Length: 154
Picture 1 (cartoon, rainbow, N blue to C red):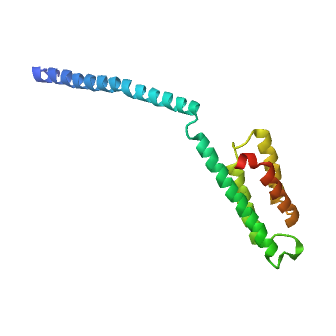
Picture 2 (cartoon, one colour):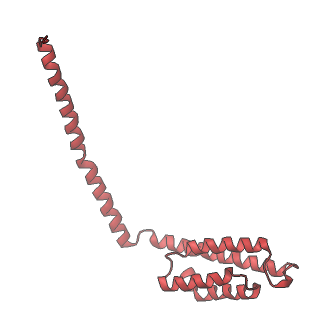
């Protein structure tokens, strides 16, 4: 049996479709302004990177932190040399663990601070600091890092 449609039932779907088409046009129309905002933000960030932005400041902050890490490593060696248990020219386990942590932090900090070939040499010298060859060899490697890479770490 077929249901007889009245004016009310026939108008109701058209009002709903009008509402949905209005909502659709509002949604699609609002896509224009966020795209414009996103493009403006992207262009602004690109121009800011061309001008330098905060990159130089971040780089100098990382270099300052790297110098602090080198200072901490020097203090670890100074404490180990002053300790009476350093008779065998090796770092105690506690100091060696602290040194390894500082080496790891320094390795993370110098990434991108210097050219790639120099960074590779720096990491080799840093491995000499971490190797257990004796406190004197490790201290010489730390001094070598301090004078050889001072241009990038100051």
